[in-house]
Amino acid sequence: MKKSTTFITLFAFIAFFALISCNNTPKASEENKQEEAQTQTVDEFDLMMKFIEENGDYLNSKAVPSMITADKLKELMGTNILLVDLRSSKDFSAAHIEGAQNTKLGGLVDFAYENAFFDYDKVIMVCYSGQTASYGTSVLRLLGYDNVYALKWGMSSWNEKTAHHWMDNASNKYATQLETTAYPKNAVGDYPTIKTGKTDGQEILEARAAEVLGKGFKPAIIKVDKIMENPADYYIINYWSAALYNKGHLSGAVQYLPKNSLGRATELNTLPTDKPVVVYCYTGQHAAFVAAYLNILGYDAKTIAYGANSFMNTVMAEDEEIGHAYSKGQVKGYKVEKTEYVETAETAEEEGGC
Image: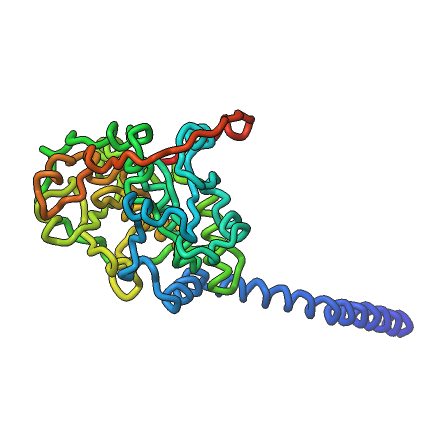
């Protein structure tokens, strides 16, 4: 009997401490579980899209693409504008527009804040062909900088010394391989999954913008030759009207209507999340606006270098309905400035973009 009483007492003692121990840990554990569950249930894509939609959904509006011609820029010189040149330091030093400031695409968000972009009537982004500038402009527009523009045709339209990028890349290499078959859009699918750790739509957008720009422009551009090796590896978007699409397009290309087809209310959910989305337009600039937007949303999006001009330039020049063909007539011969170039370890590794 004595042994039984001792055993019962010992058991009660152990049970008491076990109860205390259990009562002390669940509170913290349950709070952690609740936090984890909340993080897991936050749909960052949805939150960010709601913010974009509530603030005008720039890409699916009349404001896109926000570009300015060399002639118009020349008229604005001396007014309350800021020129931002995204080319390499070496090329900037060799020839740039008077008053332009040189910076990298990767640090563009900080540069915009530090240089008070909102204080200017217009901020004009400049690069080689206009595509890198359009990419950066698209991101800044999504962040609310509605006074930012890209220079159409880039520095290739400003002066003969800086025109070789377009001159060297306007081509007709695949003009005889265009198709008129209308390819169907993908079936409706899931949207990309975004994980920034943020729970506010604006903060998610800002985090995505910094990440996308931080990668530079290289991951967002592809040459038509690479695509033609195996078009099936890509989901190719012809970003023209149906009428122009029917005149001839790349093999496998699917037509999406510019300015309104890539929203949640339209056909955004027909884009695949398991293969690169390649967008092409006339010059590659409008497509660069689209690629920036889609990359922020979590897609793997690219623009074809130099757009349709890279494979059907003469066709575009001869068909007034298509138009937008690059030619020597685009080069205005405006004055450029030269500054001393000092190479550093950082500038030696720079990528000039496109």
